[in-house]
Every structure is written in C-alpha cells, then in structure tokens.
Image (cartoon, rainbow, N blue to C red):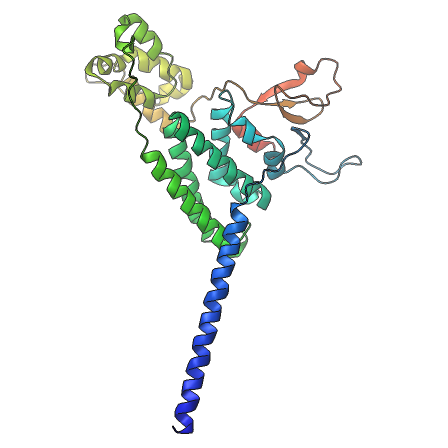
Length: 321
C-alpha cells in the first residue's frame, strides 16, 4: 500500500470517528434535555397570593412579573376545582397567544405541567373537549412561530425541549380526537321528554352559540327548537351591546333580522362576554392578587369592599409595564 492511499484511509477513519462522536454527544444531550423537561416537581409557595408592584420602593425591590404570579397562585390546584376550570383555561389560552416569551423558564415548565393536568382531567371526565382542543391548537401555532426565532432568545430553554413539548401537544390532540362519549345506559328522562317551554328555557341559558348548534344536531326536534329566532336574539343581547348589534344587522328577504347569522358575525368582530363561577381577586388597598377562598394580609378595615374580581385579560394587563 502506498503512502498516499494510507493517508486517505486514515483521514477517512478520523472523519467517521468525529462524526460518530458528534452524533453520540448530540444523542446524549437530547436525552438529557428530555430528562430535564420530564421532571414535573411542582414549585410550591407557602403564600398563595402575590403582591403586585410595578416599580421599586424602599420596602420592595424590583417588580412583579407574570411568570412569578403564575408560579405563586397555585393554578395546578385551581384546575381541579370545577368553579375555576374555565377561568384557568381561558388564562392559559391568553398566555399561549402572546405571553409565552414573558414567562421565566420555571414558569414555562409549570405552564406545560398544568396544561397536561388539564388534558388528563378532560380525558377522564370527557367534558370541555372543544375548548381544550382549541387551546392546544392555539398553543401549537404560537410555538411553531416562536421556535423559528429561538436564536433571538424568544423562548427560554433548549430547542430540543420545545420540540419535545410540541410533540406532546400533538399527542394530546390525538388523544382528545379519540374520545367517544357513550350514551347513558339508564333509560331515564331525557331533554326531549320535557315540555317544549322547559326545553326552550334551558336553551336560552346556554352562552355559546356553538353549543346550540351541537344540540340541534342531536335530533330533528331539537334542531327545530335551536333555530328559534328568540333564542339567538337573547344570545346576541347577552354578549353584545345594542350599538354593536346595530352595526352588524343582517336582514332576510322578508325584512326579519337573521339573529343566528348576526351572532356569529358579531363573534368575529367583538369579544364575547365572559362569566366565571370563581375568579382571582385583587385588593385595591394592599395591591395583592389572590384566590377568593385564601387569606391575604389585608390591613383595611373592610377588606371585602376593597376586593374586585379580575378577568383573565385583566390578570394579563396587571403585568404589562
């Protein structure tokens, strides 16, 4: 064998060795990243409230952040309370749309752990499937955009961690798609067994037009009732102001208002009214954010008069500086 061929073989061997070492290091790093991401030890705080301060004072240094509040307010327990479930889900959706980069690494991990608990609860009780599927889709679309900008420090953590999280979201979506809600085996009274006036009364208490549409797909009798103009009129009046309604009028050939079409058009143009069984509270006296059934160190003479409910969007706004 001449010296030139020997040198070529040696260079080829070194090149393959370096590639193999590179692949091995990358594989070990990815395994380590996934192991770190899979740790789900919650971050507990003794106090289930947070002081919201937007500037440094003599008493307090720095300011409160959205991530800090997300860690402190025990949302992990809140989702197990049916009164707070929709509130927390809406908050998770708002964070997914625009606030993920503002969360710290710890808060981002807590966010994903809480989201997993939400999915597991929905799979268990087989309720609230649609809003959770919408939440997952919103989060996945946001992450697809944010991951492309990882070099600009948009998200905290290694790219492998976020790829793994996106894969988890896709798996959760597939699990939710396979849910099959079984009909009850007991032959008791059903909605269609009630008098028509009671059926209409129940329908008028639904606050989401999509629920009315789904109800109308059950049987022809319910479909006729859900097409009632009065039901959709009350739904429009519940969510939107008279001024908003007047701007989006849709008339039939006979001169009647198309309330159903108007409702979905209004939904595309304006936010719907939000109503929750239980919300976070903000004390205007001591500037503390807390859940209603938890105590906070308030020094006001009449603490209840100082507390105001905070909507999910209001929670986000508290931490915009």
